[in-house]
Image (spheres, rainbow, N blue to C red):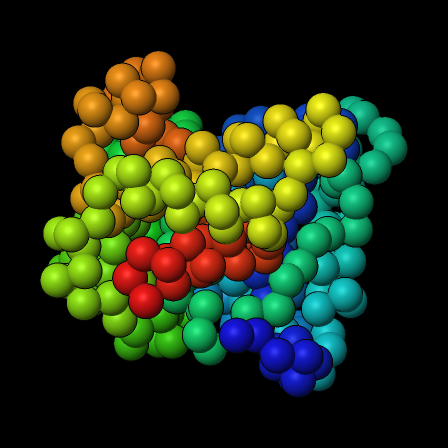
Length: 282
């Protein structure tokens, strides 16, 4: 569990930002190279340690260490320098980014999980088979497919992963990637009805609905959690799950994948997952 002290003393952060009004912030290879040159300068100036990254078309993700509470100044410098370049190149005016930036402290316990989340980000664009070759992510560096940029520090994550399995873990997460302490014997005995019941109770406790919009949100969370747990715990065949929910099998897999990424930044959904698992395997 992340404590208040962890958040106060952490020097590692998951940082993200996107274009104002969700507009593109990169229009070409040239733009991404310009962003990386400015990142290199800021890493040196502020003694940052970048551990993982992904540059999408209209947003960016970074996992980094920012000592001495320098993150606000470092991000202001990085975003400001890049916005000046992009506005000059495209002959536009006004803010480029949606807001200052978004950040979340990263503890030792969830460091590798957050890095995997960042490395999975391009899957929605290039698919599972193309994610390792996506040129604007650090995943290719960690699996030996691309050279390491000078501003990327790989030691901490490299020491926490099995390089031979890492690509498969990112592309097709397994239960061990989420809950390494769950004994194998528990997984076989769990059925889909058990998963659905546990997900319903957990979401009702942590993400209760009140009013039409919140009821729909709660129903979506219940469905998403049930799909993820059913897939990860092998509680049902994907085709059978698709029939139950009235969707295509690909939708089940996609929903399960999105639920895994939601775990990183949605604390209530994460608590619902933990409560459901306690009921199922505790």
